[in-house]
Length: 458
Ligand code: F0G
Image (cartoon, rainbow, N blue to C red; front, side, top):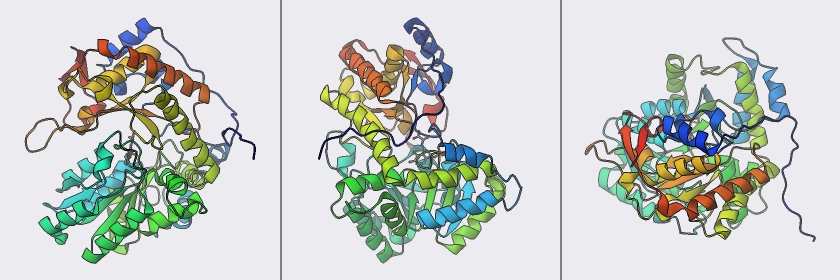
């Protein structure tokens, strides 16, 4: 067979012009933003790889769906379309829409957690963990050790270490563990997938003790694609079939539809448990809105229903993950220290390896994100000590093993040429790494500090 390059399964109908500031203007902009890329104006950014959250390009089908919005307060037909989609594509019985993922995390944490509980998970995510803690639980990381090693090439670094999980059950007792928080894919580990083999074993163990599984399904279709590519026995299954199999091994799910599901806003809580459903339906009216809109417009739910169907198409994931792998491979070829293997939603730069001369107290990942912006106007995100926050008991920084900068690729937005520019800039910043000075934090908010913290150059 002749070789053919991969290409996007769509063509471009509308473009959004980009602006490029001069280097001097970028230095001024990042200084005014307190060296925090979250505080930059998006207008001042050339290629925006801050996040893949809510930044995807919708399809013409989704835009057409917006016009079918039924903006009734109660019982919008778009809700029923979304509900049916969640049932048929994802396989969960009950749906409570929310404005985004963290609202669903808030509800499930409050419903299932009692003060003094423990929630084991395959690494933490910032908002997920905070909601667990605010509901009274202690989060315990039970991901396999390989996940904390940026150089381990293990293909399923999202897997749960069954020995760590068993040890926690033995130590605190199953009645203190309301659920296992299982994410597909693991964002903070570098967008790393969990294997079905592992998930089946986790299901078996949790069932033995009557412990639920709450599935953070934010990037489940990307995870399914990796299973199709890498896990023995799944090569002939479709992404859609694998998504359903993953979900069938879990009890409840929280979704940030701003990722996989290709919308700019939206999320939901899904569950197979009637009691949890009823409680969530009660709660949603307090925090989000009526249970048939949950903080969304009818049109948002329509776009989400269509986006969910597009997200499980094999050719979509092939191009989506393919683009991320393309950027990752450009950097790997140049010997740039990145998390291996390349994950599904972004390429994660290893800031500790960029800046061996900086300690974690000098915020190497925060520094690297700022340097990259100054070099080329590419905006990335810190995923290191700033994101990890402080220990609730000691008040000291949490020092995560991984000190990363995430180049997150929005879906269907940028071209291969954009990826080339990003790679060139990362290589330049790496070549000048030894000149970088670290940062000092001069303003620190109490919750999720990475969003609004401000820094000064040392
Ligand atoms: N879970 C995961 C794995 C996420 O990546 C996110 C968001 C959430 C939950 C929360 O969802 O933002 O809709 O409330 N991640 C974004 C990111 C913010 O940039 O990685 P949300």
